[in-house]
Amino acid sequence: MAQAIRILGLDPGLRKTGWGIITSEGTKLSFVACGCVESDGASPLSERLRQLHDGIARVIGSFDPDEVAVEETFVNRDPQSALKLGQARGIALVVPAIAGLSVAEYAANLVKKTVVGVGHADKKQVQAMIRVLLPKAETKSADAADALAVAICHSQHRGMRALVAQMRAAS
Image (cartoon, rainbow, N blue to C red; front, side):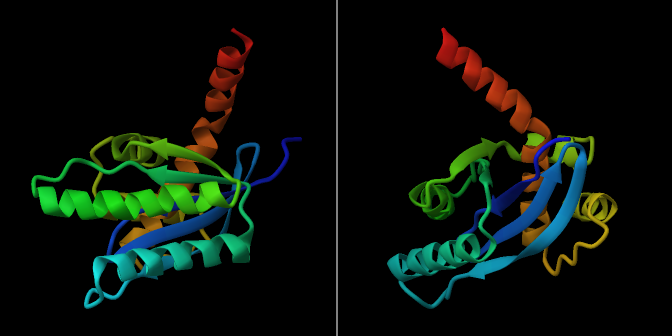
């Protein structure tokens, strides 16, 4: 029997960073919790990033995940928006790292392909599959559903990532 692993998925955003926690035991997935960490749009950027940092740290402290998966951002046409999103993504990567957790990154298309079967699925398709794969999940936002999708993607790909890491270490 496979050991249960608690996975935190993060969907970074400056206004809202979605988070979702699942337990993966072999092929069995179980919903734990999900939500969003929000920042105050009226605050300076540095304060908003601190709010995201503190919120993600609270989630990690409350749910004690074993591993973390973060969605990679797509390149935005607006350089200013892309830069701000990149800064929020940096917070999503560094907070778990500071907590001593391993962090994996997944492209949005891989997350969608893993969960829905189509790399260019829309948010409604992702939410529908989340309801199928995690029937007890109560996602109140698309950001939380996306974060659960990232966690599911990690649960499906983590074994291969571990194998590749072992092969690199052995050579």
